[in-house]
Image (cartoon, rainbow, N blue to C red; front, top):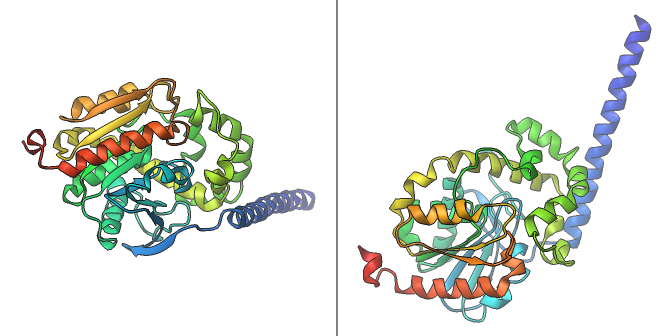
Length: 328
């Protein structure tokens, strides 16, 4: 009996040592990442969240919302400089992402995140900005237009998530953790080693059929995923989005603001026929454009095309609701 107790104690000590070592590694990695990529914007309090954002340029306002697991650098990498000469460009880290916080008991529901964006629009005194949403940011932009149409002038959706899938994509299964306690445990132990190990698979899917630019880890903010808080935010957002996207398509016919969709025809993450064409079928007046050979991260790999699309949608939004077909 004494030997068994001794063996169990030794095993428990080994587990504690491994878990402790992984937690130390996670904290050390997060510090190094944040030293390499410190906050580059300003902070503002909105609905109990401390939102990190950049605000550059002048002209008709644009608000850019990033996708799952992303942050503002996804847009500042290639799009900001292409837009800020003719527009006031506001790019935020969504609640819990990048350097923005989410209240401890704050909701990750798409409606809650849309409400935060609406509050940011109010606090910055923006007059019916065009909302640009990429991937999951597109779903949040859609919820913003459904719940707060008076706040915005229109939507420019870039590879948006518009429908719930039947299954969780393989790339996201590692963050599909429903228990908040288990989510935190994974975040501080296995998440960072898994992210490092699966880096090529993830980047290949997100940027495919092409590859990620060499400067993506720093300039595109890719390294910021190597933090426990980033894993927690991505997992929390995924669970909420899967639930909310099951109900949203029934409301797409309610949209009244101008809506345009831009997709990569070769997107390996979201099927443009479902999330683009399927959405447009449900939304009167919306239109879709395709980029041949474009993947999911068109905001970086096809930045000129995206900037042109956003500029055209901004002009259309500026006339809303003056155009007769948009008033009916």
